[in-house]
Structures are given as C-alpha cells and as structure tokens.
Amino acid sequence: MITFIARRILVSIPLLWAVLTLTFLGFRVFIPGDPVDIMMGLRGTAAERIRLRHELGLNQPLITQYWEYMRGAVHLDFGSSIYSHQTVFTEIAIRFPTTLKLAGGALVLALIFGLTGGILSAIFNRTPVDSGITSAAVLGFSVPEFVLGTVAGLVFGVILHWLPVAGDGDLSHWVLPCSVLALGLASSLARLVRATMMDVLDQDYVRTAKAKGVRRSLIIVKHVLRNALVPVVTVFGLSVAALLSGAVIVENVFALQGLGTLAIQAVSQRDFPVVEGTTFFFAILLVGANLIVDITYAFIDPRIHYS
Image (cartoon, rainbow, N blue to C red):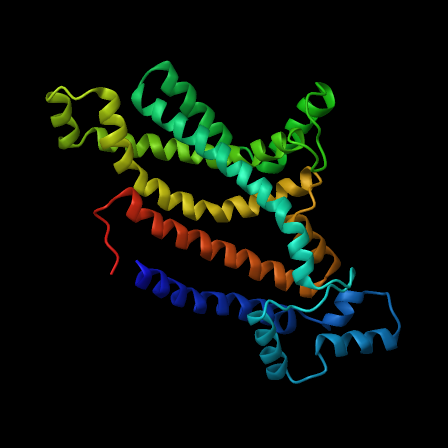
C-alpha cells in the first residue's frame, strides 16, 4: 500500500507540472497584449506600471520568469495579490474554510440522498417508488446550479422567509447552498447506484443466496451493495471536479466568500497571481481526491490488490 501511494504521488507530479506550465504560458504567451496593461487597464501611471512589471518579474527573460514561477510554486509562493496586496497563500487560506464547509456539507448530503435513493430505487424496481426517484434524479441532474440556486433563494428566502439567502453565518445559512450544490451529485449517484445494484442483483451468487434462504436485508448489505460500490466510488472521485466547479457558481449565487468567489473576482480583475494560485490549489485538490478514491478501493473490495 505504501509503495502504491508513493507511486501515485510521483505520477501526480508531472500532472501538476503540466497545470503550472499551461497556466504560466496562458498568461504570459497565449493572451495577447501586455499583462501589466491587462491587469491595470486605464489606471496607474507609467511609474506604477514599471514597478508592477518589476514585482511580477516581467522585465526578465521568459525562461527566467518560468524558473522563478516554478520555484515559487514548489514553496506555494505565487506572490501577492495586485489589489489586496496580501500574499496569494494568505488569500487562499482565508477563503478555503468557506469552500470546505460548502463542499463538505454538499458531499454529506449527496452521499445520504444519493445512496438512499439509489438503493430504494433498485429494491423497489418498477414500482411508483422507483419511478418517482428516477424522475427526481433526472430533474436534479438536468437543472444548472445557478438556476436552481436562484429559484431556491427566491422561494425559500424571499417569498417564504424560511432560510437566509446570503452570507455564511449559522447553520441555517448553509442549508440552501449545500443543498443546491449536492443535488446534481446526489442525482448522479442515485442513478448509478440503481444501475450497478440492478446489475449485481442478476448475478448467480445473489440468486444462490436467495435460494439458500438468506435474509433479503443481509443479501442487500453484504453481497449487493458492497460489490456495487466499486464503480460508484470511481465516479464519485471524478465528480469532485464537478463539485469544485459547482462551488464556484454556488458561492457567487449565495454571496459566500470562498475560493470560487476569489477565483471569479481574480479573473474579472485580471489579478494573475491569484488566478495562478487558485488554479494550482484546485489541481492539488483534484489529485488528492483521486488518490483517496484509489486507496478506498482496497477497503471496499479486498480482491483489489496493490503492487
């Protein structure tokens, strides 16, 4: 197991290097125009532009800029924000807890409702329960987060006055954003759990267990659900990307000051150091999530071995 984890970490290094390289080239080579002019627009004097160019190292050769950029990335140092003048690491550290609460709450809700819905839909196949859950899953998967968030805020916050629609105060402030973010993932999980469980229910060893008189609940928990979870975990790990991208939208809809809001603000303000730092941080989160998924396989299915 230790060897496998070490090998996966080593494999992730070229991926992170590619993300950093593409981000660097995107801002310094592929985007037309002077980065300083793009960042400052019509503001600032000639002296301020010269100072900013020196701070960003844009007066150095491109290969030197790349070397300094990669060296800073290794130490998680992407410089300072053009607007707040705080270090990028500080900006991310301040905003990350908000995104973690949002994503964590959505993850818990998605697991609860996705697994429960998928299991019930498979157990009560071709019944009104199955039809209702399947229809709700299709609807939840189809509605975009910004539409669902706007409608939910209007109905539950403005019209009914049940829940707050902005800010990150007590638990009531997190109900709407976490639910909106969780709906798409819960719908995908419910459909996948149903499909995988239906496939496992048709296997010979399940029919044999039924013939031997094993309790239905024991068959579902011990044989069906455990074997059906392997593909679910795979897709769930890949869904972390959708969760992060959805968090960017949901944070802006509900005025949460997380990493998503920080990234959008940085792009709109052309704050390139912050964009570079948040892009790299999101890449680390994705690599870490997929590593956790690979390790989880061994606990779900002992037949899976790591070498």
